[in-house]
Image (cartoon, rainbow, N blue to C red; front, side, top):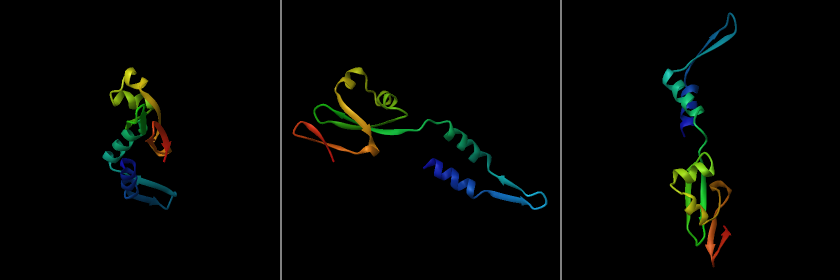
Length: 103
């Protein structure tokens, strides 16, 4: 959402055209530029679903699966109870009769 908002503000900025030399100048508010720089330097955040042995599942967020697990507070002990994981946009699974079945 942040990237779309910044893009909208840039597109709504003032363009000036110098017909004499064919140059175009874009005037953008400094706050918009600062926010764009922060966004560009922020790692992509992905959503992962953790599927645990026994049927529990949880969505975690982070730049990588390791980052997401760390941010969610999962250590090595919890990870050993993990059956598998996948990115949220790669599908979903339901626990049926002791096994995970793709929806």
